[in-house]
Image (cartoon, rainbow, N blue to C red; front, top):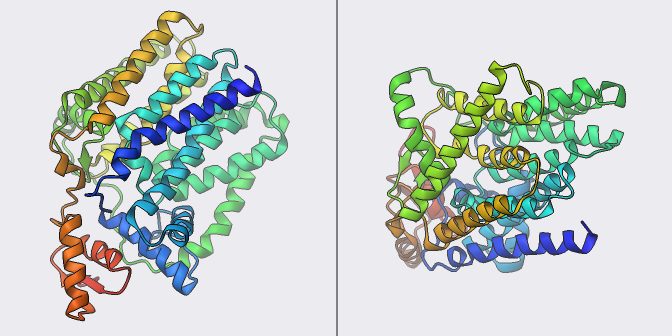
Length: 426
């Protein structure tokens, strides 16, 4: 593939990813949820008070430095606007999308058309339609870092500096969003063991050094919210019976926290197909393991990582966002499964691309209002009305009836109103 072809492919991927999201950004009902508003408030604090951002406010996890700094930069240019934060977060995600495509071309340079189509599937899938613009404490940063890590790990002739960067990135991913580590741990272990003589031992060393450097920032962070990360009260049978539908909602993007909202037929088709793909590829890998064939290769290790993400979700509170690491790894697994680039394969991938972009442009939510139903009962118009009323009445301190609504209100008053939830910690 020529350099011009690669650049044109990247340009097309980026522009098409932007085009799919334009209707969402231009939506007059666009509103940040409570966690996004916290990132916005951290950005305002950085701009006005110079407080350098670390972990998500009040937590010892969810490293938010990149998302806050990009939001602050965007606010400086466009003003404190919700869409400005969305755009800055999307830039981080697009960088990850580019490196994902470049990783595919590392693996099979001649299969650039297939790599382009696989990357478009990631760009157009409703799975990341909204989350690619959600700054919520490290998810998008983790996606970008995993993509860069895959780019480095698939380099044919890595330099010593590549191993250092891999270790640094892995440590950062563990702080951005720990779940994203599960998919790449097997790959990193394999790389470290099999290229030990090529200085791959720099991976664990650089990773440990990075963790030690981050530790002071972590312990200095005020820790208010310290929930139990794992829960052991799920019934296996009920979890298994609900898992396919939960995964379908995840791939279609039609959820918020633990709630699943009705989806359009196109979104249902996308979610069901991706769920079927995932099950088929994992089953195929298990059969290969049973026959002791292809036990230690990239496909098997990717399947093991995806399986680990699924198993861990059993011990987490229900939530579609916990499966966000899967799609990128699944599409990489699909790419590796085709040893030859044939017209039939590309036509099938092209058809999937059309389905994905149709579902995203149509809006995956069957009820459009569900797109902004964040359990606070406050939409854009009510937030604006409330902000204007508080300003008119010169009210600066209020209580809210919802734990996430307080952050929305503080963001949409640009930090001029102090809001607290009626809870002891607040």
